[in-house]
Amino acid sequence: MSAPERPLVVFDGDCGFCRQWIERWRQTLGDRVDFLPYPEAAPRFPEVPESSFRDAVHLIEPDGRVSRGAEAVFRALAYAPRRRWPLRLYRRLPGFAPIAEACYRAVARHRTFFGRLTGWIWGRHLVPPGETLTTWIYLRLLALVYLVAFLSLWSQIIGLAGRDGILPSERYLDAVGARYGVLGPWMAPTLAWIHPGNAMLHALCAAGTALSVLLAIGIAPVACLVGVFVLYLSATVPCQEFLWFQWDSLLLEAGFLAIFLAPWRWWSLPESDARPTRPALWLSRWLLIRLSISSALVKLASGDPTWRDLTALRHHFETQPLPTWMAWHAHHLPPGLQSAMTAGVFVFEGLVPLLAFAPRRIRFAAAAGIGSLQLLILLTGNYGFFNWLTLALCVLLLDDGVWPARWRAGLARWPERRRRGGWWPWIVTPAAVVLFTLSWVPTLRGVGRPTAWLGPVDLLYEAVWPFRMVNHYGLFAVMTTRRPEIVLEGSFEGTVWQAYEFRYKPGDPGRRPEFVAPHQPRLDWQMWFAALSTPDSQPWFFNFCQRVLEGSPPVVGMLARNPFAGTPPRFLRAVVYDYRFTTPAERRATHAWWSRRRLGLYAPVMMLENGKLVLI
Image (cartoon, rainbow, N blue to C red; front, side, top):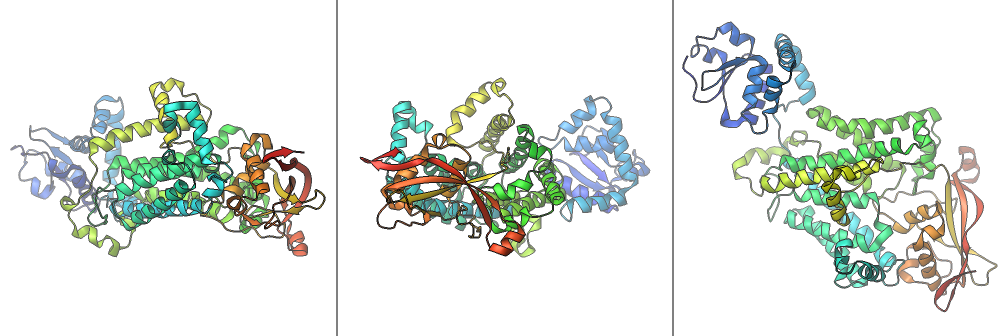
């Protein structure tokens, strides 16, 4: 037998199932291995019976070694980078080889069935079509989320953190500097250190808006992604509690990981961009998987009885921070259906994301499942840009084969060798390993597991934590079962009180809950947390009340109705009510969406004395 110059795979060229998988192997192995149908190979290798070629795939190597069946498959794949592990298992793991050969024989005897199964699982694209166009689309969606985030924040940042805002950024940075000294900029990483004040806050949002637009167009994507990450982090830090939510962390982490997905080009076009590296793609996919599974795990780990007995959604639609009018209808669904929906939350958060590791069409089903849950959440609650960003991350579970053919036409016309702008593996791979390892620290902490045993990994996470590149996730670990709401009232003389009306949170029982997302009204959202605790545990609350008594335009401007336009009231009080959705009968009779019962004062009556807030 004359040995081939390169390893040669001999296969059944008449079998459609075999041809499909050979094409996939060609892409994996490249020019490291040759392929030949057995009718052409049989005359060259008469030592191998033709019947043997018909029964199983063979690998003939330059040293004359001939292997067949599962062994031939594993030995051939071992010529590809990072594909030697199946052959190691075949050689070293007891029992693996006979099981692998038995499975191979079963597939070989039923190739028609497994050909159909391949079609069901992989579709028309058993050969991976790549993710260049998919990544390009994802980066455009991420740019739109950044744009919404900056515009939403810009409309309220002066009231939140401006000089006359609730939590002035200047005071905060002065306090950080006094405590940490030269380490202050590391502990509170923000460009506002350059010139804290209203002008800088406006500049951060304006620059972020501009770079988001450039990113959406495709201009200098790496530079734009670095810029929007730095700018949003710089805006997040001085806003303190108002921007310390999981969607802000998710946007920062997704944006940071996207830097490694973007091409190094002045103008990004899908037909000429280099393919994203696998480590960078899987980092962003891992973020989606971790986000979903962590949300399920924290619910189980919390021990909350409403999650354990599947009654959580009987409370959630009514007690969530900013429900939509559809939440009223969802709240009145049959209890059995709500329990089934609660069980569905665990399925779609805890199990479906694991399908992201499965073959192509099953992975698409995972994207559809996670996306469907996000759409249902989006219809019943206002969570800013959180659901939209999660839907964008779901796009990364797809590949280029799902998009219309006319979108993919340019990809076929532009050979891989002419594509430009790819990241160097020696940068991306180590970064991916570090970030993946760090991600286990917040994940383990979120379910109450210690992380000190991770040693330097735990210490490194603590060191980089202020930059929010790796974060903890897990929403609604404990379900609220009642809805206290704070109503702010002012008075000139202390006897006749008039209520301020917030823009979006429940106030007037007759006002319909609105769709607000993707805008995130930070003050309205924070008031929900304040009502669940005491004013002493929410130090920003008294600052807010002082600004209202001062008539601060940027703060009062965040409210929907100011009954004291022109002259602020002398006295202010916060009354807490217990809110609940009206029943269908109550709504037909009163047209109100809410009914409420007064519980008492949330905080004592307040007034200003020599410019300071005084509790009466």
